[in-house]
Length: 198
Ligand SMILES: Nc1nc2c(c(=O)[nH]1)N[C@H]1C(S)=C(S)[C@@H](COP(=O)(O)O)O[C@H]1N2
Ligand SMILES: [Mo]
Image 1: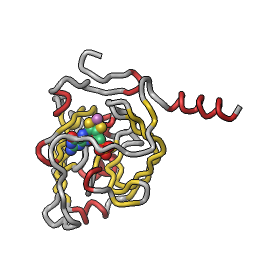
Image 2 (image 1 turned 30 degrees about the horizontal axis):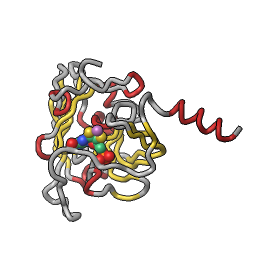
Image 3 (image 1 turned 90 degrees about the horizontal axis):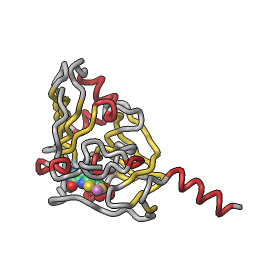
């Protein structure tokens, strides 16, 4: 039965206690930065345990090899959005560009207004992770992270920082903004790692 098949597929794709949404909710703390397409004051700083600490303009970022990814995203508040198409730079291309040192095991991602989130290096460098500037063929809107956001689809979506401005490679796992406020250090949606005590 067709209906049954779709339901079964959704079950396989939908982590526990999530619901599929066709829209795209906007969630964050703080203010949306508006650049009005002028990125002359924008840069991306990449540092910490790397061989070549680097500051990239948006143009320089675009000169790195482009990647496309299709994935499902899962917000800890309970919505999941299927079949997102992203274009951007693979996190591995960034890593190759700066040279990650042996001692680096974790990543702290920093966004506008000092918002942060932490992920293990391995997850940051997963083949499915990227720094995205386009969603479904369109430039990101200001609300969804223009000009650049992280997308790490296999973790709850709070790990996918909007308005990313810095990437710091670290030897220890420090807490980011939500992690300091009770959210899980890792955030696997399939294991429902929502809060620190899950
Ligand atoms: N800079 C920044 N990025 C952020 C957040 C934030 O507050 N600030 N919130 C996170 C959370 S909790 C979620 S669910 C997603 C929401 O992304 P969306 O608004 O594009 O759906 O962004 C994540 N990235
Ligand atoms: Mo979230």
